[in-house]
Every structure is written in C-alpha cells, then in structure tokens.
Length: 364
Image (cartoon, rainbow, N blue to C red; front, side):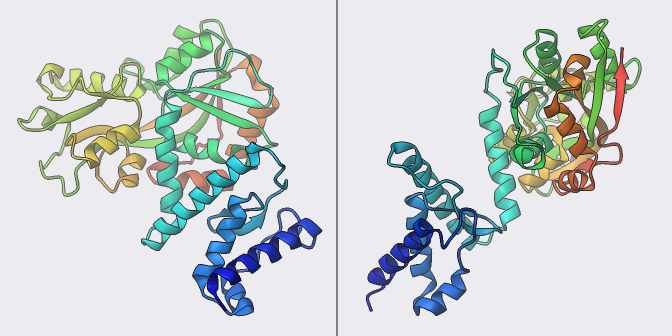
C-alpha cells in the first residue's frame, strides 16, 4: 500500500479516536515502534502522521514524554491553528537536532539560553497581576530554568523575568515596579553580598533575602585557553579581546573592585567597553570568536562548551520586600526552593552550590 495513503489513514484513525473520546485529553499516543508494527509501515510514516496531528492541533509532543492528546481540542478559529503550526515546527526542529546527536537536556538548556536573550528586553508591567510574579534583576541561568517550570512546580503561577542587572532590580523594587529582584552585589568594605546595597536603596524597609544559590564566577575562555590566562592581571595582555558585563550588573561591580585592588587600569583592557546584558551573551560572543575572554558564571561557559577559570563563589539572593512576602506566588517559590528537587535541578545546570538554597535572611 502507498505510504502516503497509510499516513492519511493513521491521521484519520487517531483523530476519530480523539473526537470520540477513546483517546482522552492528556493521554499518550502509542509509541512509534508499536505503531510501525500495527500499521506495517516505517518510522517516517508514523512521524509524519503525528506531525500532521500536531499541525491540526490534536496532539503535542514533549521531549522525553512522548506525544499526547491536547487538553483542549482545536476550535474553528485561527488561534489553535497558529499554535498547532508552532508545535509542528518545534517538533520538526527537535527531531532534526536530536537526530544530529544532541541530547534532550542539551536542547532544553540551549533553548533556555536563547530565550534569555529575548527576556532581557522585556519591560516590567505597569499593572500588577495576581497570578504573575514579576522579577527584575541580575541575569541567572537558574532563574531562567525556574521560570520555564514555575507554573508546574507551584500552584499555576507564572514567573516573568526582566534581566536588567542587580542594581536595576533593586531600583525596580524601590520604584514599585517589581515583586522581587535578583542580586549578587558584593560590598568591598564589608566583604558581604547584597545587604549593604539593600539598606542604601530600600532604606527603612523590611526585606527578605531568599538565597537562590552560590554561583561559581570566573573567566570564560576559548577552548584550550590559547592565551594561557591564569588571573585577572592577564586581561591587560596585548592581543586579548575582552567582553564585559553592563554597568550596574553585580558581575561588573565585582570586576571593577578587583581591578582596582590589583592596580589594573580598565583603559588598558581591550574590549572593556564592549558590554553584554547577560552571562549567556558573554559566552556566546566568545564562542563566535568575537572576543577571547569574558567574566561570567561557570554555567554559561559549560553551556557553550568553553573553558573556565574560577575566581570566586558569590551568593545570589532573591530580594523580596515584606509587603510582597506573603503573596501566594512568593510563598510557592520559597517552598519549592527548599525541596531536594529544586536543588537537584539547579545543580544539574553546573556551576552552582545549593547548600544554602532556600534559606532566608531578613534586613530591616
């Protein structure tokens, strides 16, 4: 029998099973191997049928979870069709990239990093939304991971991210434009993180510092460390192109303090004024050969397959004013961070220490 005819039969048979209720919303379609045996056809025919069903809006595929019937069947309007088209294109991409040898975890992490770039430019909403927790602050890969799964691990809340830097996050809190901020600002005089800056920018307020994790920070290097970099002093070497973080970021604050401590003039560093908004942007620039060295978190280096030289371990806190603390969405986030599952998810990114994840310190 012609394979295209079989493909159409499979699509219609499954569609009828879904419409009749024999296949319930959320139920999983048979494994591709089982379907090839049932229909006496090859894998490509089954994949084509499943892709067509996705295009029509009847099913959706998740990496590692198989293909499932959608929770709500498509209606006769453009929105489901638009979503079905997106699902179909996404599935095609996943099939192509996984066939090329990439693991589902690698694909998921790479997509998350790419989405970070778009979230960087998102504006903080003007009107509060009860179901949405608004985050403004320093870029962090673990926050991107949490945002992607937040509605699943909490009670249906959404975590909206805007990466502006640590200072930008605290300013957003002061201006009542965020529910919580992400900060890792190191104070040179007290050798502590975040508390001195919270006192200065949010004076007289009672504020919770909910620890996300401790992050490994250092120099992100080209593979093989061709310039034989061993310390910050090497940034001034002739021929080395540096890529920096933007002013106001905690990473930039730490770097400037360290350069001052070791007596390095920033003007002598090629690329010092080349600023990026996220750790991912820094690592991406190096991976593309646009720069040789940058300062960032180890997670970003690992994600792009780059070398890394550890310089410090810093504390990254979620800064939450007391009037926001009892919000159900905040308490859901706090509760999840205290679980072994949360720590395992963060540790799987690499470059984090989660011994104090979920602990709370109050500043008043």
